[in-house]
Length: 249
Image (cartoon, rainbow, N blue to C red):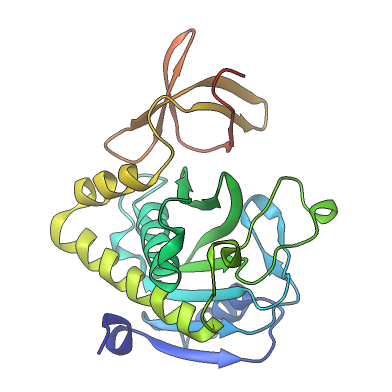
């Protein structure tokens, strides 16, 4: 029996507008419980981070979970983006092991394949709960004309299991990393995240509102904020839209 089998209560739907909206509605109606997980085989109005839409290219992963918010910490970011991205990354890798050398996490929680976005995470707080939405292109990716940046799908690395199997692998990873965080603290999560993320020295651009910073990835602060080495010294970034640049560009 996997960790996911006893940690989660998984509900599957042929179609939903948004798995995250479904979880929000459940929590607002007073029926939320840690361990609830919702999988939609088709999602018509998926939501991404920063108000973006998440496009369903067909046979993709549309999964949202409800967790206890008590581990979110006192800082604005908390450990959830890192716990979620580790569970997501490890679950996708378990589904398609051949992707090992090609998957990477982009700060704080996007999943890239060959440098192109393959999966994203939406994290929201609702009362006593944290809601985590996870979307991934599995068999195909949206048409390039419909998205802002190059995108990829997991099938580029080989045969992808059915969506429910992939979801169960991701849920297993989420359960494992949440327990690791609870038992060993954020330092353990931070170390594992750095092993799976863009390498130190990667050229980055951080955009957000009026913010535009160029520099090189210098690691994570103890609370998970991004460290950016710039011409004007070290900057600590709490939030922003991250663009990976080619070295030497």
